[in-house]
Image (cartoon, rainbow, N blue to C red; front, side, top):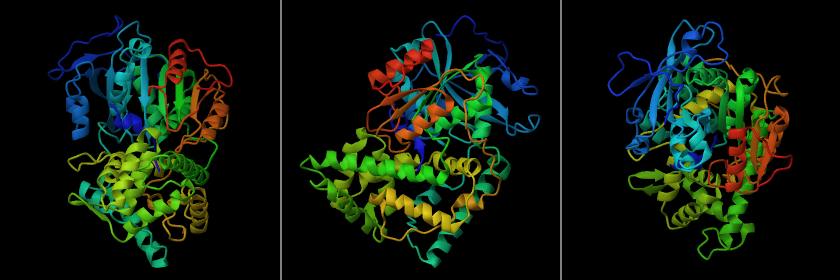
Length: 521
């Protein structure tokens, strides 16, 4: 399961120091040179000091979702920034990073760069979704709000592509719950074929340079090219991992970081997955208790029997998907749609609607929730989020090909999240990463506060299903940062309408004031 902020993905005056460069840009594009600013690594001067061509954002839209987001938004400007494909050989090939900016309207401090997680989520889309929150706030007045699409994602070029849209639709219907040796072997053949298609459709060289290790170097190029000597950054979910890796690589370049919905730097992949399973189990139980108080609850009035009722609704889909307007709701999609809704209590209402529909043999709401998770628009076109998620995970995380160990993790996950029990015994299956055509390039695990890192702010939510609360406690401890606890039921919270959290986060970003120990909202 991904670590990204669904609310950011479904919601929706330059200062005198700006130097506008004359030249011959494309029509409607304004060239601007603010960099190089701050520290510049040797050999990368042309990237850190490059001109940026800003223009309207409509040309960066490639789906019905992004076209609607970017249409008629004159306050927004978009560009692509050139970076090396391989930082070990910066004189070689280059790629381009998509960037969206909403300029500050007041006494500008600098840029506030944003990543919503995933890995594979679009920072450009996330920035647009946050514009209503910052319109009248100090953040909107003091910072250029800047969302960037990490390499391989969204408007960045090239983009990761493993499966065609039709192949992705077909893959979602493939349930893969057969735990027999034959069933496991078939699933592994499919995973191997997926890895082959990723290399064929994206190129092995690009896949080898997609990891977080490379993303943080792109982030430092953006910092300088945008004219900022120091980085101000908000990272949600997996975006906290980007922030932590940046802090380790460039501690002296950090001005301020808000890390919300933290990935625990001390956990291995197996332990992290099990902890996430426990988080979703907690969220399901909270949903069941909320639902049981309603006369229309799809799972009945006894929360203790909610998991059984849920499985009674979803397990039949293994053999018989539900027809939905020319498509089908598979067992996989029903689970994905439910998980999408469990990311936030604000989505519990549509979750109950979706389960009620399923009782009646309908599946439109759960399919829509699953489409949102997978980034499928109304025209059937997919974003890069699913392929990028896999590609980044496969170069970021150590590979485990021990089937016995994988089976034990699957057993522990089932134990942590029993509501997701599909009825088949847990088995160890090699995933696509086991067959990945390029080596792991992960940055070293963060174990101590990097020398020279200023105070950072970590926000952790007590009822966060995707990145459980203790992960934020761990990250704050490792970074030596301030911890703000939010008592709520959702994944990530800053700039999402919780006044107490927004006030503390904004006071930190603007004035660098960290909250007192034990701060809670």
